[in-house]
Image (cartoon, rainbow, N blue to C red):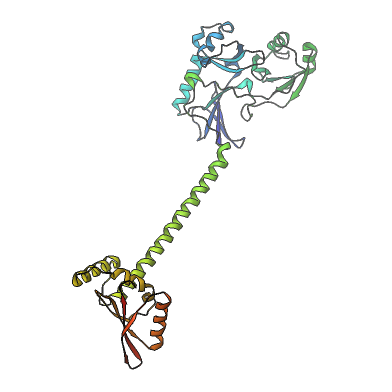
Length: 384
């Protein structure tokens, strides 16, 4: 996933892929990306807390709940309620509404719609029983809790004034982790502040994994793109796709199998029809032609009789005969006559034996020899 991070007011940006910077720049021209995060500087966010009533419309009353901490008119601010803290109050983040509108409007001109707007001063991870101080040459911020942070101004070689005020107003930590581009005189600061300071590498918003994701894009600024984490559903989606593929293969196999069975049945019907009616030269629809032949025979005899049942009883045996052995078929009121031209007595005896084993009773009405060949007329009576 390609993540674009933008930090006003300079609109410096970086493109991250697998937590590494692949592109960077500043201005209003941005690269292709999958998601976009707006990093709101610490100086532009006031973090406070207030008691909020139990309601589903916290965002509507948050601005008035934070009124005690604000100098400006509450309606001129964008206030985002956070989670409920251990003291029963809710964390609140306050941003100037006009400033937020101007930032988003500038990004919109470049077709950029951030998915999130994160509070920079809440992004660093904070060790247990410690605070985090991030400083550069001119300014920085102090993070004292998961949802508590203060913007700070540089005080030259002296500790920032805001740091001293925070130590006086809040419970003192066991240590303060200092992230600074230029190394301050920590020993002197420790003496003045009476707290242990430990130096760490410089902190950078560009590659930091946010420890606290306080999204300022809520209410009127809520991102229109709904964030969905697909990772938990990935195994189920893969399983569903595999099941769909297997189902499609199963359907294709069944269709092919049924098509082969249909073709085999049509071939068998055509063979039976050609065997029963050798004078038919063209076979287009064997079942239909068989039905028509049956109707013709019924009309000629004047009696529907048992033609189809009689013919069906010997059809399995007839289908095993070589073409040309069955030379004629006749149906009358007393039954069905079949005329055969067998290559010899053995072939006739074998055919007759198969009929007997099948329980089909026949009468041999004629048996003539023509050299080695034997012409036989078999009769199947009604009820056979």
